[in-house]
Length: 259
Image (cartoon, helix red, strand yellow):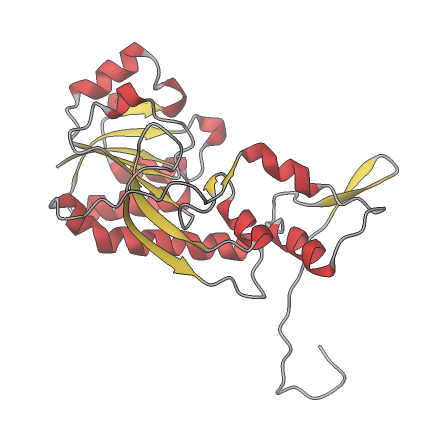
């Protein structure tokens, strides 16, 4: 099977490296532009494709890029934490379709920051493998796995749990995908949630004169605790004061007056 990878971030690197180790045929690679890449050098090195077969994800609408990818005759596309929308005419290049790895338990938290919204909205957290269609994260399901949100989880810890789960689920299901033995289950219509990247801006500002429940305030701060990113804040003399939450579980075996 001739594979075109469209990948970014640690999960993209791990899946790229694993596919190469498994002897899969990676005919091309699409990465984010340099300023938006995460683990870009590691991904490019692991893929071991020719330099002229490494493409910029922000240029997929250009006819020259589309034609160059078409010439590679890819059977399947694998999108892993890839930040660009794939147009319907691009999807037609793949006889076996394009499969996406998403850090959310669809249909909940389509779009951006699923780790944040699972904490804020109390929606299920998990990961999904699904086919890409003309909309965002609405294609037929291949496999899913849910993960509990623990009281000590922040946006960062939950994100890293979802990353590891993505890699494990992909490795488990890839042999079935490769052999064409997976079933396609349409996502249910109605329900679910969707968020744009800019939606977090609406919850990041903590208004010191507003009334919050303790649960809501704690969930906002912990969901947006992801060092080194700024996260939630309040204003003081015209400047933002950023907040990060440290969560510690009581040690019942210790003696004394507390932690």
